[in-house]
Length: 331
Image (cartoon, rainbow, N blue to C red):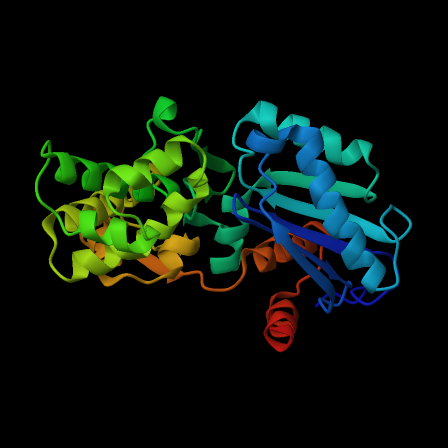
């Protein structure tokens, strides 16, 4: 840790903003965790930039207040905000402008949450990280080169993440029930999971808003379980997701010209955190033949730790050991 790490020159505000949850932490310059608050997803695609910034600010004020501090540049040296849904240059620019205009801290960095996961799994923040939670995205970093993906869904070529996988489970169940598709235990599993009389009843519940779209994500464990039990349709969905994750990794490594080099590949997000053997095995089997020196890292710590480490990096403070220990103690 650098010599000035404990000087009273302002705290760090670290933020991990996801589609399903938001995690805010306040740390001193020695890497000690002073406060932490968690809340619901903040998505700018749903709330808009002003609404999402206001939602994060509420959590930030609560966290700082519990540490006896006020939100603002007097107390907060730097904001490190790594957020889902901040994928394009315009989105990053608009979100940073909104954060800066609110005067949270003396300096601020806003970027995609994939960078926090990459830093969580690497010492220097270089390599490739795939985040598969409610959605899916990837980043690759090698020196000054950065590989990004738009992560805007079908329009940008994306497939995967918990919400889409769950929607595909519903689709397969619907087609099995009405005869358009192959038989699959997914149909009975959907009926049992939602407590309905038929897949059609569940479809109507989603269509009329009785079930929110976020409930598609509840079907991911169903897909993994039935794939493990041998259902061919469920297995096909898991295999497709493995292929999509591997495609992100392979494209990043090729674009960064990292074939034949030792490189960390960090896997994070709620879906990958589940550690499904078929899913992970499918990723390894697709990546390693072309990139045998890729080193897979399972990021099972909270991504806000990655945000905190990036924030300390920005301040010129080395605090990996202290920060990780602080969050373990607080867990």
